[in-house]
Amino acid sequence: MEFSKNHLSFYMKYALIVFNTLRKPKFREFLDWVLRRERIRENRVKDVQIRMFPLRKENGKGLAGKCNSKGKIFLYPRRLEFFRDKMQKLGREKVNLYIKSRARAALIHELLHLKYASDEDKVRELTRKYFNIFTKHQPTQNPDSHKIAKMLFTQR
Ligand SMILES: [Zn+2]
Image (cartoon, rainbow, N blue to C red; front, side, top):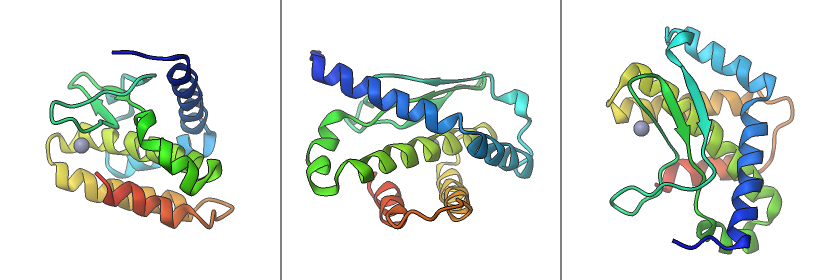
């Protein structure tokens, strides 16, 4: 595996965006609300780790996140290669929005797994539902958010 300087700076920036996005008080409050609503006890979440480099599953697909039975959640970036043509087509703003949205959706998804375990369909359905609720309640509606959500939930 080779990581060039380019890779490194890309993934460092990526991780910083994710870190700043997920620690925003508005989003934290929202997650607390989701946990209450789903009756997931907050102490079930032991740790959320933002990993700097992507993880690929055996089938070659990238993984947005995973959690273990001890309540540890790991979040992974999308590969740089995915963004190469996106940067041209969408521009930096939308790519940033994509990164933020993907991170929020991934964390919601993994929190739900703490309750629904391996019921992937249920988790996906609820992730989409909660993600949309959060987006709708943002004080300023980003005109691209619909497009980005579509990208997120239809490309797997
Ligand atoms: Zn899942």
